[in-house]
Amino acid sequence: MNARAQLFAAYAEWRDWTRRETEAIGAEAWPEVQRCQGVKADLQKQILQFTEAAQADSRERGSNWTDTQREISAVVSQLIEMEHANTARLAMLRSKAEERFGALRQATRNLRRVQGSYGGAAGTQWQSYS
Image (tube, rainbow, N blue to C red; front, side, top):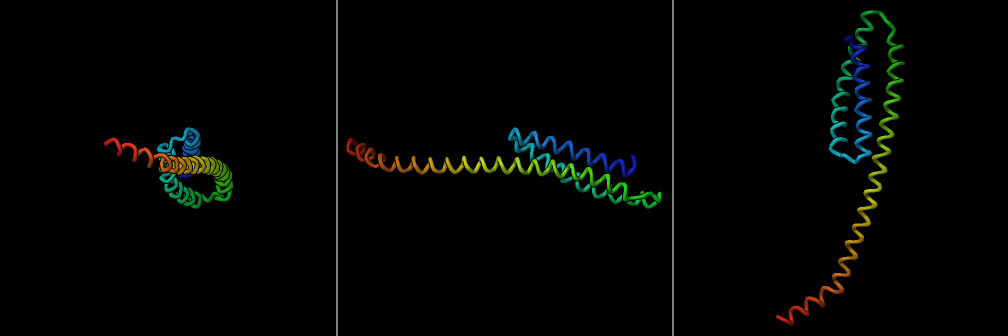
Protein backbone atom coordinates (compact mmCIF):
# COMPACT_ATOMS: atom_id res chain seq x y z
CA MET A 1 0.00 0.00 0.00
CA ASN A 2 1.46 3.36 -0.97
CA ALA A 3 1.63 6.35 1.38
CA ARG A 4 -1.42 8.05 -0.15
CA ALA A 5 -3.52 4.92 0.33
CA GLN A 6 -2.23 4.57 3.90
CA LEU A 7 -3.15 8.19 4.55
CA PHE A 8 -6.74 7.75 3.39
CA ALA A 9 -6.99 4.43 5.24
CA ALA A 10 -5.93 6.24 8.43
CA TYR A 11 -8.59 8.89 7.84
CA ALA A 12 -11.19 6.12 7.35
CA GLU A 13 -10.05 4.54 10.60
CA TRP A 14 -10.39 7.93 12.34
CA ARG A 15 -13.96 8.16 11.02
CA ASP A 16 -14.71 4.67 12.37
CA TRP A 17 -13.31 5.53 15.81
CA THR A 18 -15.27 8.78 15.84
CA ARG A 19 -18.46 6.82 15.15
CA ARG A 20 -17.59 4.47 18.01
CA GLU A 21 -16.98 7.50 20.18
CA THR A 22 -20.41 8.89 19.22
CA GLU A 23 -22.03 5.62 20.31
CA ALA A 24 -20.02 5.58 23.54
CA ILE A 25 -21.04 9.15 24.34
CA GLY A 26 -24.67 8.24 23.74
CA ALA A 27 -24.32 5.29 26.11
CA GLU A 28 -22.36 7.42 28.59
CA ALA A 29 -19.63 4.76 28.45
CA TRP A 30 -16.81 7.04 29.52
CA PRO A 31 -13.98 4.47 29.52
CA GLU A 32 -14.85 3.67 25.89
CA VAL A 33 -14.93 7.38 25.02
CA GLN A 34 -11.48 7.72 26.54
CA ARG A 35 -10.24 4.69 24.60
CA CYS A 36 -11.56 6.13 21.32
CA GLN A 37 -9.85 9.43 22.00
CA GLY A 38 -6.57 7.68 22.81
CA VAL A 39 -6.66 5.68 19.58
CA LYS A 40 -7.37 8.85 17.62
CA ALA A 41 -4.43 10.60 19.27
CA ASP A 42 -2.20 7.77 18.03
CA LEU A 43 -3.80 7.97 14.58
CA GLN A 44 -3.03 11.67 14.44
CA LYS A 45 0.68 10.89 14.62
CA GLN A 46 0.34 8.30 11.87
CA ILE A 47 -1.62 10.71 9.69
CA LEU A 48 1.18 13.25 9.93
CA GLN A 49 3.73 10.62 8.91
CA PHE A 50 1.58 9.34 6.05
CA THR A 51 0.98 12.91 4.84
CA GLU A 52 4.70 13.62 4.71
CA ALA A 53 5.34 10.33 2.92
CA ALA A 54 2.51 10.96 0.44
CA GLN A 55 3.90 14.43 -0.31
CA ALA A 56 7.35 12.94 -0.91
CA ASP A 57 5.85 10.27 -3.19
CA SER A 58 3.97 12.94 -5.10
CA ARG A 59 7.16 14.95 -5.63
CA GLU A 60 9.07 11.88 -6.75
CA ARG A 61 6.40 10.92 -9.27
CA GLY A 62 5.90 14.51 -10.38
CA SER A 63 2.17 14.30 -9.68
CA ASN A 64 -0.04 17.16 -8.57
CA TRP A 65 -0.21 17.31 -4.78
CA THR A 66 -2.97 19.94 -4.97
CA ASP A 67 -5.50 17.34 -6.13
CA THR A 68 -4.67 15.16 -3.15
CA GLN A 69 -4.93 18.18 -0.87
CA ARG A 70 -8.48 18.81 -2.11
CA GLU A 71 -9.42 15.22 -1.35
CA ILE A 72 -7.83 15.51 2.08
CA SER A 73 -9.73 18.73 2.75
CA ALA A 74 -13.06 17.07 1.94
CA VAL A 75 -12.31 14.16 4.27
CA VAL A 76 -11.03 16.41 7.03
CA SER A 77 -14.10 18.64 6.76
CA GLN A 78 -16.34 15.64 7.33
CA LEU A 79 -14.24 14.52 10.29
CA ILE A 80 -14.34 18.01 11.78
CA GLU A 81 -18.14 18.01 11.56
CA MET A 82 -18.25 14.67 13.34
CA GLU A 83 -15.87 15.90 16.04
CA HIS A 84 -17.91 19.09 16.54
CA ALA A 85 -21.08 17.01 16.90
CA ASN A 86 -19.38 14.86 19.55
CA THR A 87 -18.14 17.95 21.34
CA ALA A 88 -21.68 19.34 21.38
CA ARG A 89 -23.03 16.03 22.75
CA LEU A 90 -20.40 16.03 25.47
CA ALA A 91 -21.18 19.65 26.38
CA MET A 92 -24.88 18.85 26.65
CA LEU A 93 -24.24 15.81 28.85
CA ARG A 94 -21.83 17.77 31.00
CA SER A 95 -24.40 20.53 31.45
CA LYS A 96 -27.03 17.97 32.50
CA ALA A 97 -24.57 16.36 34.91
CA GLU A 98 -23.76 19.75 36.43
CA GLU A 99 -27.48 20.45 36.85
CA ARG A 100 -27.96 17.08 38.60
CA PHE A 101 -24.94 17.74 40.77
CA GLY A 102 -26.34 21.15 41.75
CA ALA A 103 -29.71 19.60 42.62
CA LEU A 104 -28.00 16.92 44.71
CA ARG A 105 -25.90 19.52 46.47
CA GLN A 106 -29.05 21.50 47.28
CA ALA A 107 -30.77 18.34 48.54
CA THR A 108 -27.77 17.66 50.78
CA ARG A 109 -27.98 21.18 52.23
CA ASN A 110 -31.72 20.74 52.82
CA LEU A 111 -31.18 17.41 54.57
CA ARG A 112 -28.52 18.94 56.79
CA ARG A 113 -30.92 21.74 57.74
CA VAL A 114 -33.63 19.21 58.56
CA GLN A 115 -31.15 17.12 60.50
CA GLY A 116 -30.05 20.22 62.39
CA SER A 117 -33.65 21.06 63.26
CA TYR A 118 -34.57 17.60 64.50
CA GLY A 119 -31.22 16.04 65.25
CA GLY A 120 -30.42 18.13 68.29
CA ALA A 121 -33.70 17.40 70.08
CA ALA A 122 -33.49 13.66 69.45
CA GLY A 123 -29.94 13.57 70.74
CA THR A 124 -31.03 15.27 73.97
CA GLN A 125 -33.87 12.80 74.47
CA TRP A 126 -31.60 9.80 74.07
CA GLN A 127 -29.14 11.22 76.53
CA SER A 128 -31.90 11.68 79.14
CA TYR A 129 -32.65 7.94 79.04
CA SER A 130 -29.06 6.86 79.54
